[in-house]
Length: 452
Image (cartoon, rainbow, N blue to C red; front, side):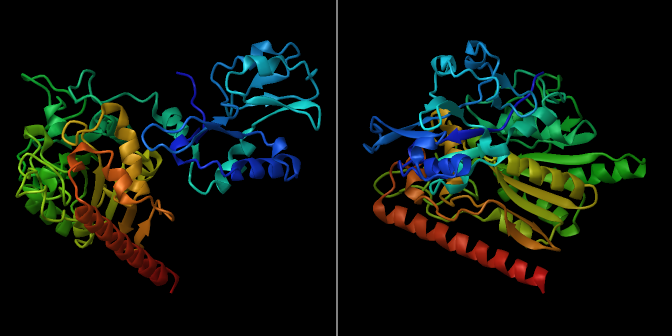
């Protein structure tokens, strides 16, 4: 299958050209404040068309999978490291011919005139100095390679050819989830986008390689609880997994979910939240945010989108005191996998509830190639806060955002919010700020109890 490697990712839209990364690199590699010794360079580019602000480009070794610099080197001084993916440079072998600089298309290998030799990034042993100091998170150390390396060879337990909408992250989510959970699983998929894309199959042919059933919106959790008891009676350890939309969780399905949570029934219940009944015409659900356009909360002279605030369903589940509750995003798969690990263990003896935020390209009016950026912006603006809870340790923020981007930057990416007035935008920002303050206070209280 091959291997995947960690890498430095550059977000050009966040970079302001401050050069802190270059200074940090020069200090780490040469002990000097002279940025000429930096192995990373930030270069001014054309202004962004969308904002008119000056853009920047990155000159850095990309540690290419098929590096052109390596065959250019006549002395064999450059070698692709099979363990960490870094292109290693051996100064003892290098003859300073500079042919490698010709082979690199990214200006990733440069000539340092002060020492008379080439220089390139070595990722600081997996803890890049440049990433640590970037004040705007324009540089990010991406470690999702471990997910691919660990689970890439496992069997995909959903069949090929599911009919999800182009760009929909729900299919990404359920394939990752079932690959991680494994075959000793029974899946419940109530009416919604997930069974709609073919997971439960068509015409008597299943779309899943483990037992999967299609309950009513109202009884998903109670059916899983009963099936689990039967498996316990016959002595089989089988995980109960619900893959439900927000309508089947927050609205019609909430009674049975609340009952199962109150009993702490052993199961893993995953709410795939796309903020509405997207499979049946984009109607509003109980978790549709304030201001959203949907087919049942239209925009016109009298109505201006959803008038009510969304239910904070993860907090409602926390109040049930079930064994594990967490929020997650498909834009942060490492965080999701970490929580999925914990949830699988908990679900053997108690209720684990994961609330995963997954934008809908069709219902939200988002270009399909922009879904991942929308996911990341949800978190960067604190519109979505990632946290986890257990009764023993309380609530803990798993991806705190110290310098959040204004919520308006997130809402402008989404067509269903294009009608918002200045007053509505201000209201949403206040609501987000209040939500974050409350969660921070809960997390702080949990830390005080833990250290008492």
